[in-house]
Amino acid sequence: MIKNIKLKIEYDGTNYAGWQRQINANTVQLTLEKAIGKVVNEDVNLIGVSRTDTGVHAKEYIANFSTNSTIPAKKMMHVINNHLPGDIAILSSEQVEPDFHSRYSSKGKIYSYTINNRQEKVALNRAYAYHYKYPLNIELMKEASKYFLGEHDFSSFRNKGSHVVKTVKNIYQLDILKQEDNVIIYVYGDGFLYNMVRIMVGTLIDVGRERIKPDRIKDILLAKDRKCASKTAPSSGLCLEKVFY
Amino acid sequence: MIKNIKLKIEYDGTNYAGWQRQINANTVQLTLEKAIGKVVNEDVNLIGVSRTDTGVHAKEYIANFSTNSTIPAKKMMHVINNHLPGDIAILSSEQVEPDFHSRYSSKGKIYSYTINNRQEKVALNRAYAYHYKYPLNIELMKEASKYFLGEHDFSSFRNKGSHVVKTVKNIYQLDILKQEDNVIIYVYGDGFLYNMVRIMVGTLIDVGRERIKPDRIKDILLAKDRKCASKTAPSSGLCLEKVFY
Image (cartoon, rainbow over all chains, first blue to last red; front, side, top):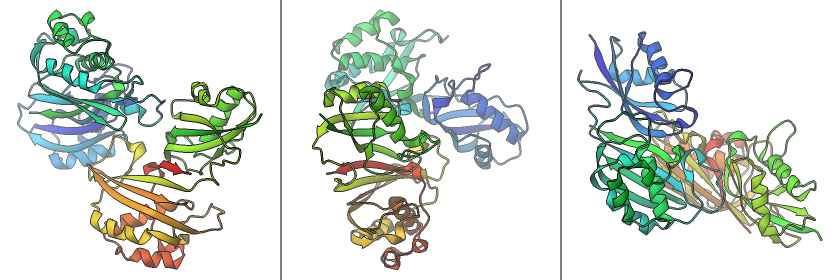
């Protein structure tokens, strides 16, 4: 009997060319499919909740696959983990309904973006944060973040590379926290376009740097033109925190 | 005129064979001496506050060197940083009194040790924490930590490799914090023997695991015998936080 297995996965994206399977590149999906294939002794097609870029991390990535294996679902995580390198960890494995689909069933996601905002050079945690050395005005960034809330067309905050037709997304929450040297931005929305969080962060940085006014976000959204938003922030600061179903 | 330059340094110890200059090994001291040598155009003998092992990190390591260079002391950090790899960062450079000696002038140090205490496999931040998957009783660890406070002979908490004669050290403070999955142990003392913090942590873990009672620390200290203490905890969790003068 075919079972649908759902995996919760943590990974350090530093040494991978993102999630998605590619020819001639080491990706998280490919590494997992190889490990699972060894365990279930079948070819595996792993469906992931989202494509992530090189260097992007995940604390709770969700993926699922179909298998004929008789290994109990909850036991699978331990066996697969033994075939995985240290930078990919399965946190749980469970059998789910046949129609569960990691991507299509997803109702929302939380991403975090970490900016190390100190003047001095940074040696520690460089794989997990973007070092931005100029002072950021957090209050202005918080003010700007309000304009992202709710339903908007995010065409201005999308890089080429995605084939998504629906560019209207709903942002439920956007929090900006200061923790020692770090400014951490949490974005919770129903879905995200290609590089959307990173372009939002790049634009919030320009607000914090006082290069653009907070209410400029409103105009950038209305323009529906990528050229109106700021630079895409580097991938290392980005982490998929949680997926909702 | 010879100047004595004090450097404050952050480094990620993952890819170094510790601080101390060695033949045929890439160390933090050697990497810094080469970079500084290029800048001041002299051979440099860098004095560091302590020898750290492979994989140990530092947020505020202190080192000093003598130079004839006419480059203003405060400017030096920028020039040297340009010659350093990304995992070593000079945070400040200043001219100090001729008799300042990073090691001998030191009045105390704070180390932190991070244990990732969750059951699941860990993929993120593996270079900065020791993953210990069995539940730890933090209250017992806190009780045990009190026995370390004050002046004691720490011979039981020293591995071979140090030639220090004075084995009596004073622990001013020992705090144990729980932050999400992490248990973080801060140790503040006037000085530390070779691997002392890591053996203290290994022993505290045995207390948290309820293998030994908290007041057993008292007996281990009195025994002055390395065999009475527990295993040395791995280096990755250890970080030099601060040095006092």
